[in-house]
Image (cartoon, rainbow, N blue to C red; front, side, top):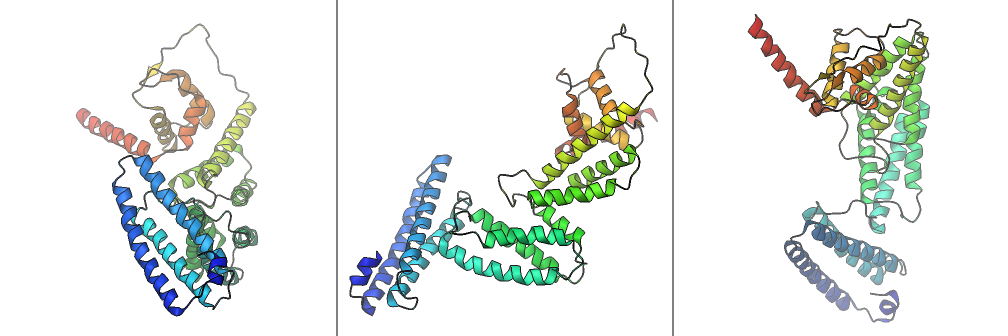
Amino acid sequence: MHPELIRTAKLTQQTIDDWKTQAGKEKDIIKVQLMRGVFGINNERSLELYVQNCQQCLINLADEVTEYAGHFARKSRQAGLYQFMLLIVESLLTYIEQHCSRYFNIDAKVPDSYYKVEHTEIKKKVEKINRVLEIQNINKSLLEILFQTFTSFIQEKNNTGITYRKLIYFKELLNEINALANNTLIEKSTNELVNLLLYLNFNHVLFFNFYINIICSELENMNSIAERIEKLSFHVKQLNQFHYRPGVSLFNDYPHIKDQVSGWLTEEIYFLEKKNQLSISVMMPKNNNEKLEPLFTSLSVPQLGFFIKLLVDTGVVNNKNQTELLKTITKTIRTHRNETISLDSLRNKYYNVDKSTTETVKDKLFNMINQTKKYS
């Protein structure tokens, strides 16, 4: 199939038809051999390597055929033959993706031929969406961040960094933005676009900075530290309760956008609480000779942090300074493992609550409610 051999060969239509027929038969044979190999391997890791090696060989072959086709005029017999062979290779890649999806490497580079087709479609969609959104009531800086990202993707040369994962993400991002742009039932606002980018884990550092700047602008209008802490805690709660699309990200090697913002919020809350603590002039009397017996709990650190949060949020505990409250807890309470509780660990679990923790604490609260019935 090398261009030099094809160029010197006497290609009749009959020869081309015979080669196409043989290629079709070889495709079916490869499918059978592929599945025999899959079912003949018992080790999970070996099976993954086998499938991904087959995948990579086909990607390399597809790129090679694409490069060979470029040596001939687009409508020539030779180019037509290469295009047919390319379809054979691409169909085998699709076959692996459909039948071995669990082991298909989405971090592998997409074939050049596939990228060229998708690149053209993505470019058209970006231009169309840009025209729609630029006349809407959406923050221009946010639009600039979004379309700068699309432009970088479109202008990426030689397809060196375009993986299946990256291409899938950009197509999904475009589809979601297109749906937002064409939805006549909702207002196209900055808030709607921000929520969409959070949902799709648009973890770009510029978007992170944009989101943080929104929060900072809200804090500027507040005079007291307590108000600022309350507002930041509200944002932590919002982020924890927000629904995110699982398994997607703009940059796979960057932290999730939720973790980036939550980390910043937690540090900011800690800073403000320490600042507030330094401004308090009231000194509490201490008795250094008195040794307190620690209180032991069956709760884990995440469960304890959430339980304390419930007491504060419901007004049962009225301490305004969460840092001092958590510090007191760490000094007086031990977990079921008889371990000293780290202040940083408890603070982190106080502000970041996962689903399993809420379910466990909920069960314990139900048990407490049932227990009260025995006293009535």
